[in-house]
Length: 289
Image (tube, rainbow, N blue to C red; front, top):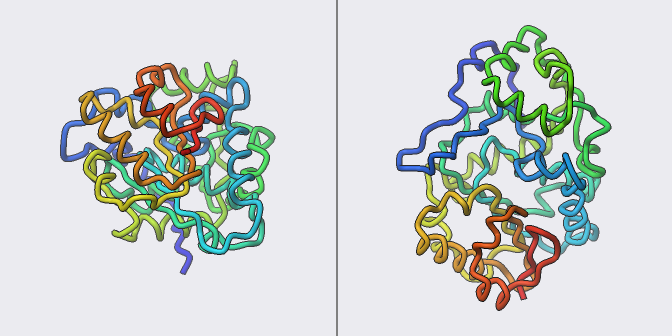
């Protein structure tokens, strides 16, 4: 049953960066934006070279034909649900009328606690300024939300000024974000319910959890797609970093895809582990041999 509550003004007081019960990397909370789409990788890459198109092209390759069984996807580090909502919006745009639950089986891991329903609802809105900026397929999965009260625009003013400056620098905007941003567009109900049901399923979602502790419990060759954006750099121990990457490799199927940051830290990935097990498709996108 679809549950989509009307947001109330108290949400402006939410703690958007819930502190995990164990030590996290000090940069973990640095850019904790209120809304989610488009996700952390896309927020940077969309500003130059249209990098998200490479991910949509990958999803086209995987989902353009009807599948016999749903593809297994693991998203490590959801933040404010950037990857779940962004990925599913693109996938839904590709599969069109085919239902999500017949095409994808989603699992998630995150350091933070499961988001409350009102926060999840807020995260389902896009943080892109113009509808024309939506990626090709994802744009088909967003709807105009008529229930969003104008009074709740104060949510935007609850964010720290440096976040606005960061967004402005990415979008090369000159006007005030606080005056120009209007979060009209959100993911459609099917996507919202799919994410909510995944989060509510203790088998599919692991909260207050370190990726190092969870990935070792999955069986070999389980996932068709694994995403880990803004995750691996937070593993401060070199040994845990290496072991985590080995387990990600182990639980990924042959010809499965690993999506990670296209940033310079990739130079620190063990070259032998990568070259022996993966072919690079694009920066930050690898296929397991």
